[in-house]
Length: 226
Ligand code: SF4
Image 1 (spheres, rainbow, N blue to C red):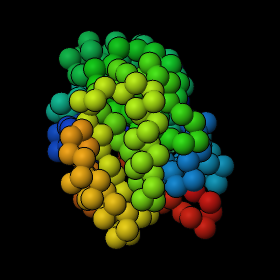
Image 2: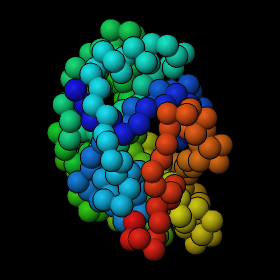
Image 3: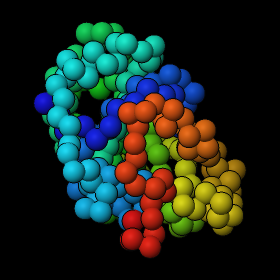
């Protein structure tokens, strides 16, 4: 059984698979505690739900099987704090590739087909995860974050051809200094850097599934310290 914060059918809004139909499973719990977390309902005491659903791998796979999702995204919270072995097995049985969105700070358990690793300064990723990641997502909460995380990934042995997406942190998505920093970095360095955007937030795509009920405002709530 896994503690599940929410599950919903939508499209992937970012990264190399953006625009494709995807089923999201968001596990509960995250020890990283980023101050601007937009999934604070998975860990922040002000936002965690009173009751947390616990579902089996087969119950989750049954839900996925009813959709035309091209793949399943296991996200969080921090999904890698859980053993995902049974869930990935159940999803592969119904022929759905499994993508993982992780900070990379914990050992990954389960057969994952695609890893999106978003490093966080509050708990650094493991080198073994950095080296097997399929793409990176740097959350740019201030212009200097790009240099900071680029150095971190290089130090941890990131492959030079693994795409590195630069996403404005959502509460900063209209901050011209952040947007300009991303633009200039991509123009100056070229590959593997790419300017990114979380387009599902503009679409409000996740909310089209009534099972999606974010407990915290998207982009965090700075006055509450996240
Ligand atoms: S952004 Fe991700 S890693 Fe950071 S606190 Fe939120 S769920 Fe955890």
